[in-house]
Length: 64
Image 1 (cartoon, rainbow, N blue to C red):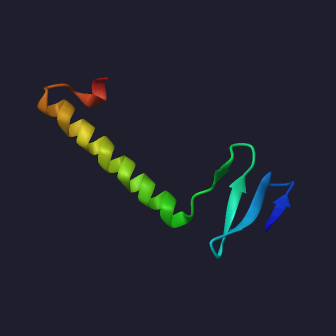
Image 2: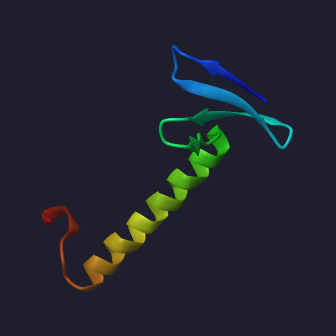
């Protein structure tokens, strides 16, 4: 079951008992706030590990 929004260009779909936004242009379901927050935290942790590794190699990450 889905409900299309021409204004947003998205569909609201029922998926496993949850209403989720789906972007038909990209064929992807949009992340929930919790999923996006977790992905952002993971990316920030990965970036910090890379910065630490560069500094251990005496490379200034701010100078790149």
